[in-house]
Amino acid sequence: MAMALVIENARVGDLFGTYWEQGHVVVEGDRIARAGPGPAPALPGAAVLDAGGRLVTPGLVNAHAHLYSALARGIPLQRFDPTSFREILEQLWWKLDRALDLDGVYHSGVVGALGHLRSGVTALFDHHASPGAIEGSLAALKRAIEAVGLRADLCYEVTDRGGEAERDAGIRENVRYAREERVPGFFAAHIGLHASFTLSDATLARARAEAEALGLGYHVHLAEGKEDPVDALARYGVRTAERLDRFGILGEGSLLIHGIQLSGAELELLLSRGGTVVHNPRSNMNNAVGAAPVGAMLARGIRVALGTDGFGSDLLTEALAARLLAHHASGDPTTLPDPQLLSLLRENYRLAEGAFGVPLGRVAPGYAADLVLWDYVPPTPLEAGNLLSHLLFGAISEGIRPRTVLVAGVPRLRDGTVTGLDEGAALAAAREAALRLWRRM
Ligand SMILES: [Zn+2]
Figure 1 (cartoon, rainbow, N blue to C red):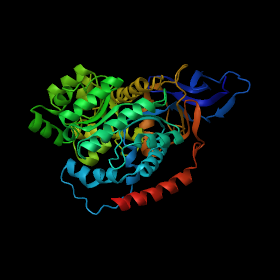
Figure 2 (tube, rainbow, N blue to C red):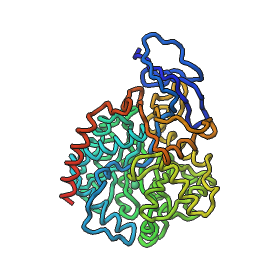
Figure 3 (cartoon, rainbow, N blue to C red):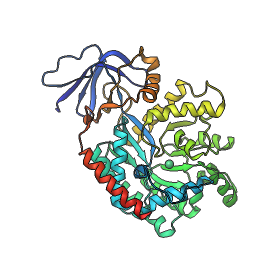
Figure 4 (tube, helix red, strand yellow):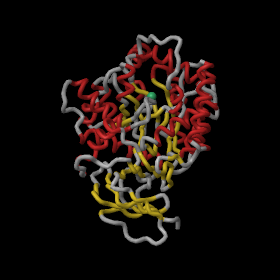
């Protein structure tokens, strides 16, 4: 049996109501063996981590990431004067992703994965695009994430914007990765699709055939900007979700990203099909595409999760942004209260359990030992009922960060130091890769 690790003298809690003011967690192998109040039982030979009264929670899950965007920080753009969401894509993201080669994919993957690790995110769902280097791109991304040590569900964003050859290569990369590179518990797959307005019926039919053969759900942007419904109505005579439903895309296990420009009939359709809408408030505000009707979706019973859409990787700040956007957009400071916000974060765990086949999100025996020791000793009373508030406001006002992060029982961040790679060297290599990338744009 693998050596046990005992975390003691910790404030231990999760987002499902567990909290012990003075608690312990015992990790054996990749799972939590026991957890509870008071000191840990004596375990001869076990390693001991004294939390010093700091907070320990399960690792977080990001339901929508774009690691390929990680080398965009500080990018010089010759022209950036977009007047629409489509022009934001054309002037920045579709230039950046086209300039990526496999080296750029790898380094952006390392930088993006490090950002997630240092934000306490131990599992993520990535939506990848690199139309200049499609074949093998998910393998390069996987190698980068493996080096940092996270769990990841990967896919390639299939699109028609680069013509048939690129479209076919994108489908092949999804299939190749799903067939050859999945690792139970660590690397999972979806079939990636960009968005309705860049996908023909023929492409959606091909993607559907592959998804059904592999038994996979879809990861697709849905009604983010106005482009999506305008295009679907003009070309197909229906709204966006209605069009995607013709291809069976909205079902359980599918990740439907954004869901902003939706009609009441489309919301009913989403509810009946069972897919999960993933909300990304900071990206939505940045792109000026509006606010998804999260409260209304939850009230109807639609599943809603939370992602960052490549706008950083700090899921706690994203969760607070979800609340701020809801208040601001509605003019009502009671919108998206704790129970609703908690339901988003819990849906992230449900999605990850489905993808990775491992119980995640609770501090309880049998659950995955994905644990974060936050560098946080609360300045005000902390209890089960206000743990979320401590996380949100601690994150925004104190910048609480993880001190130690375990993924499947393995310390991937230990006392602030990344264990899987030399972080300084990785960032130096990333800066070089970013310079090469920017010169190609
Ligand atoms: Zn996205």
